[in-house]
Length: 335
Image 1: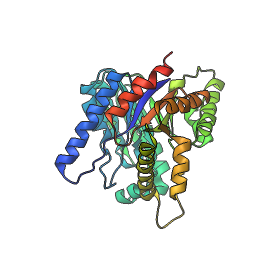
Image 2: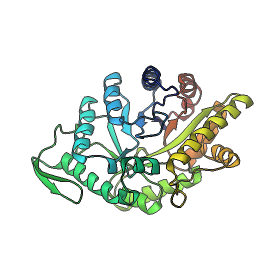
Image 3: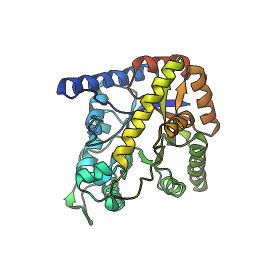
Image 4: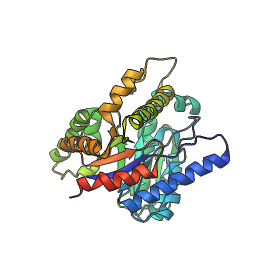
């Protein structure tokens, strides 16, 4: 089993100095993870949250490319409906170039109402914008010489996008998906899949099985590293710490729920709980919470579902919990 990181820096302050400090601490956290043997970091992209989640993920990864040497650098995810595909293809290829081929390019349609509303982009346009943006990016990375594109949203005439990415034909494309048919479509397209942090291990195992079966049906070899599962990490050495971690998780999920729900429409399809009891139940069912021995047990159950690549989201980003995980949990999963 391999482990990566998932998430990004957040600010607890309201001034530039505190924001800068939190970002620097997160960089140190990631560099420490590389030294401890972690495989990757996947950086979120979020906007207009009010608590300073990472918004310019590719810029952040370009900096990390210079501070690291082995860590895979991923986006989880770059939300295509909000971006000019030409600029995005060039920026992502630049990160791949600077990192010597370590970019994992995760893409998605977006799900937070607050972000679509802020960008004045109707959510019902997300699918078509996503599809055209992805089409242009793949053309940019795979076409030899110049090409033209004329679509509904974007037009380019006789262009060549530079630089070219190091990885050929292009950096691995990762798509966040939960619906089984979408997962099968992702597999048929040759993309990797990111599974969410809110599903139970059993459901995640069913999704992995759908991906694996589709890959094998095409006569290809399934690689467990094509499927990444995100899990919240909440180290707790005693009952008091466990309660603190439950409170931290509940606050995080409540923030996600508020940013996701459209107040003028039906409830979001994102499976975010709404009551303290539901928060607690979901945390126990879907996160890595507890002592190192408890977390090992939870990870072995995840591994029994066929999942071999887990991305850890440690809300708060404690280097000490990262070290404890590497020291007391990871050895149980070394081949």
